[in-house]
Amino acid sequence: MAENNGAGNKAVASPKKKKGMSFGLAAFVVGLGSIIVKFSGLIRDVILGRKFCDEAGIYRAAYSLAFTIPDLFFNLLIGGAIFSTVAPYLSAQLAVGKEKEGVRTISIFVSVVSVGMLVVCTLGTIFSEPIYNLYAIGKDDIKPEVLMLAAQASKFLFPQIFFIMLAALCNGILISYRRFTITSFGPLLYNILVIVAVIIFGGNSQKNLVMTTAGILVATAIYFVCQYSFGFRQMKQFRFIFKPMDKEFLQLFRRAIPILISASIIQINTVVLYRFALQFGEIHVWGYRNASTIWQIPYTVFVVAITTVMTPELAGAYKSNLYSKASELVSRSMKSALFMTIPSAAIIAVLSVDVVKAIYQWPSSNYTDLNAHSASTFLLGFCIAIVTATVVHVFNQAFYAIGQTRVPLISGLISLVMTPLSCQLLVTLGAGPISLSLAYSFANICQMIMLGITYCRRKELAPHGIVRFLLKAALCAAVMSAVVFIVNIWLPANGGKIMQLMIDAVKGVVAIVVYFAMAVILRMEEATEWINKFKAKIFKKSAVRKA
Image (cartoon, rainbow, N blue to C red; front, side, top):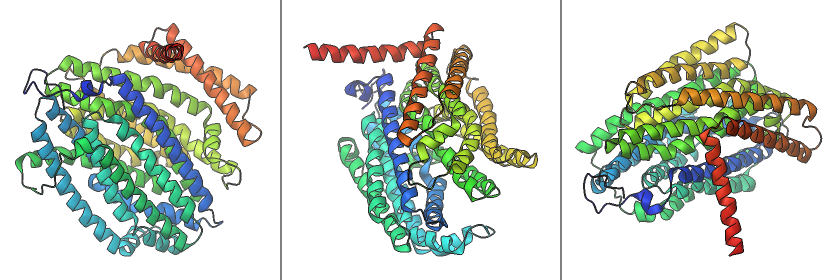
């Protein structure tokens, strides 16, 4: 339950206080969970590459294509709107002591959305072949055999998105109650189960491909059941209430529509850029996908983790008219996220090829140096997006938290126009494959400017001290980049795989030490906060051992 804050029943207790988890600790827990989940996801991708490794690339292409339409359906229909709708609304209701009303409205929302998604999944399963044939119109690059295999495999992936949706709804609810540990580490179970399915069923045949997707369906169902069970104390309050004409539900649904469209735009942009990648050959399609996965690692680990904690806190503060607290939350979140993503972008830019090889190029894999250089080319363009997407995401979640969901929609429409236009312009000018990631980054810059200007119009909510922070962080990152560049020349990542990883680890340690040293010299609060937390952990462990 949420703290009263002077409005409502005083018996309502704060979930944050009840759990005793501070903002920093919660962000750390979510970030740690994201790191582990991302790492397990990379292991999953490596195993997939080894299991579906026919020379023609038919089964690997079919596996990727099989997910395309179900994922598109999920993201277009509900995917991106779940957390950004459920968590801010329920958190705000909890903050003012209206838990009962919030639970009822969310129960209706979950019920209506579940019924709708169940219908969509059923139709997708039945009509998978004509859907994929429709998708392939005008795409001569898709082989008929690949299309047929993907359509068959997708029959298990359409039901899968139903359970993914239910798990996401659980997570949105549990985050409102500050159950961050469950929501952060739950996806690890999903990845482990998927890895098991791939190891058992993966192989270069139609039967293996279909059985793998069936195993993934089972893994998703187990993941949902576990999430529900782990959060049963909160989840048991919610009931099936199918009242699509309920007044409170309709208000919440209207609030969710712009969020839903904004999430759909992201998916559309992904499809558009994927089509541009096809112009440069199949190797660049795979390279683009690898680069997209890599740049989103720091984005997910730091930015999404921090905003996951920020969003319910900000929604509660805004609902309680605590505007100074709301401003401080956005400021702290923005600085904390940028403090980590700015050096991440710099490291990836300097060591782009090494980063790609460290993740994807393993012994006995068919991942060549040509594949690595293709992915690293895209990755260089995405380095800008690591920083700009940080600002965009923080502002988007801030707007969702205060209930102004139309502004991020307008921002998304800007990206929908700017992404293909700038990509086409860069391709025409002969920029090559990097045009795709540069176009994405440029669209992000446009979004960042629009969102920043709009949000800061309300001065009582605007973040503070950002420009001074950015100047200091940029200087720290510049010095770090120069040092790492010199170390990279002196110590290239040659030799066997273990040796390469050790050398890359040394460069990473050097980068971290230099960046934090510069941050301490410039008296950046974010650096001292991280260092103090580390010292506290060390001294605490020492005290426990002595005791």
